[in-house]
Picture 1 (cartoon, rainbow, N blue to C red):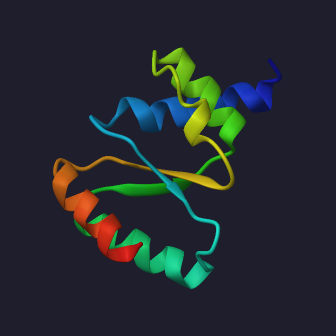
Picture 2: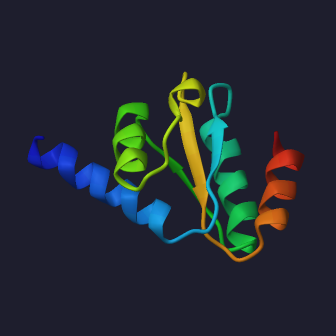
Picture 3: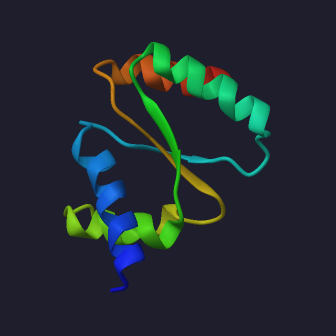
Length: 97
C-alpha cells in the first residue's frame, strides 16, 4: 500500500476507533454551507462529520473488523463519529436530512 493511502486508512481508522458508533451518510445533494450547519449541530453533541473516499473507509473498516460495508458504500459517503450521545446524534441527523 502506498504511504499516502496508508496514512489515510490510519486516519480513518482513528476516527472509527474513538467512537462507539458510526453513522454513514450520503451527502450527494448537500451544499458546503449546509455541511457547515450540520457540522455545527453535530459538534453540540460532540460528534464529527468526515467526508471519506469509499475505498479508504472500506480498508479502514476491514482492518478494525467491520465487515459487510460494501452495500452501503455507494456514491458520496461521509461518516459521523464521536460524542457520548448516539441517540442525540441520530436525532440531529434525522432532523437535518
